[in-house]
Length: 421
Length: 203
Image: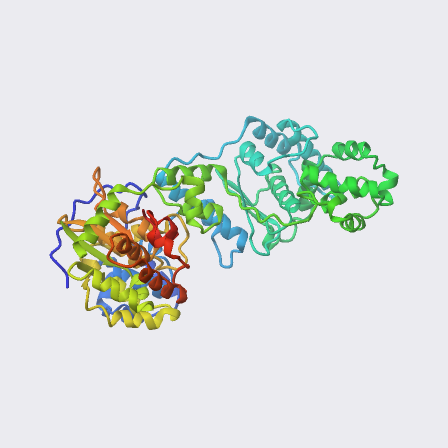
């Protein structure tokens, strides 16, 4: 039963910029999706309860789809209704569209796509700051790219270039030999990249994706804490050297022919997070001379654990740094020896070897999500995506504040319940 | 003042998962205009396997409602718009996630102005959050709000038309059927529905 329809005056929608639908494009998309799935028009028409002439009219754009038909078609073709109506909802050249290409994206790419796509939704509800770099960050990029315009030819050259580039970046950012505190924030602030961290199952490595106006680094916090920072510094290495690849996905492998670049950015990451001068100064102060480090003395082992903790690196990364400088004959032996220390002697945030399970999303998107939720332009959905959490109550309380009872809603409930009793 | 209720798929399933809850809601809404959209019936006819028996029972138990055709009130683009609003920036878990609820919201948005109080009985907590947005003309107070089936019980307890102990028994039915979290008596007698968590929203 349907009553006579007298619609309310359509109001201006406050959230979302709905694109215009072209029914001839809709028809073409349906035809293409049907062909991809080897479904005859007759079969699709039958599933939708339509006759063949109606299906033909839909595919030629002469007939609009109703909401029930669209839903049935979306279920049959296993695509979102929005895809049938509008096609891919981002230009093919955008970073999110490029990252979403292909099947079995992997957890790093999937996470990047979810976060990048959220920007469009948030942008319809509130102002979203564009990523911005600092003059110091821009100067560092320029300097490194001008100093090393070509790829390294040997392993030694790759390592040298990496270490030198790290020193250049540190100098431009005024870091001296000090530990880098909040690495993701430093990257976002100085280099206009978005940094995404989440516990992504067994994902290892990281992802660096870039387009003309966007760059995003993704790391899995399922790895130990120091490893996550190393991964981000590694991705920064790709970025500062101006690696021309738009997507570098360590989860799915670099492909062949990039071993030297990889070695270069590993050297960059190690030296950026822990400069050689810092190692020497710290170990000297702790009385960890080359001689007693070479024999893994207790003093040296404790110093290595503390150094890892202070500079936010895994013990393995510090051990590699010492091996490169000839301060230990074997990074692996040193690692094993430090791990054999009693827990209290290596129980710092980084040197404990524990995974962090940290969730972090770009600050600019988080700011926008909080602003949109506080202004009731969105719910907690964007926060839920960015924080990778489903506990909506807690998200409300933490980011928006506990809602007061809404007087208009209470009045409507009074009307409805009184008329029912 | 003319009141109208829209009931969604999850609520109809929950009314079968707890026959006492179903009976209480049906009796409580007797004499009011209660609408089930054809898109909801469509979902009930294509249920997830784990709720198939309840969905089937719900379809055969719709005589207490009126069925409206979604096509009559909204077009495909309206429903797709509301689907994305309900998803609220989250990726869709499957193509038709929130589709029936989005259909309800599209109808609420286009509803005849004679309806001054529009209620969604919806157990999709994200859809409930959007009821006031769909049912609100520019510059005016919303004409729509939403309650979950558990919040419905809470409102009845607050108005003295249902015992808190009976409400709790029905909520326990749903909990045993793995359809909602566990609640206690105080959640139904408290001054605000805060204790019901998501099931109490929107306030």
